[in-house]
Length: 145
Image 1 (spheres, rainbow, N blue to C red):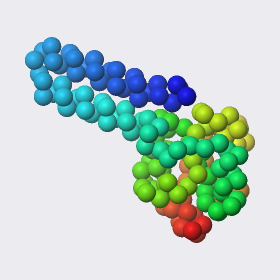
Image 2: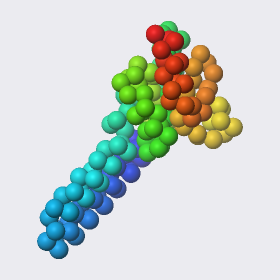
Image 3: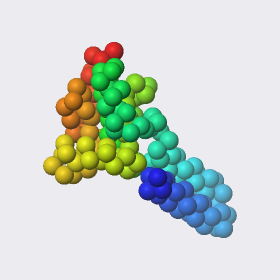
Image 4: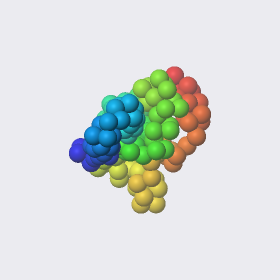
């Protein structure tokens, strides 16, 4: 759990340190802008922007029932963020598994990627697809609806 928050916490602390330095120099405007930028970057890299994660078994069970794709991801992954942002509101309709929180999910990803934990790995109808194009994922999601 803590591993997922390390980068956002580090960004928030660094932003605070930089802003403090700027305030000591008397540059309040720059300090405020930099602090906000660091905090936004920390928020984007946090698990908060992703839909609530569930376990791999539960995701597979739900996917079998409703036909929706399962996305295996991890916090801090730029490709996962790209997929999440490009899917927009549709991302909430998919089943998300954080491989840092779920060892079974990490095992599924390793099995699909020659032992590597390459994410995002999207499973559609039981077939894994590593770092697929967001448009393709959107099409697969619309087919399941």
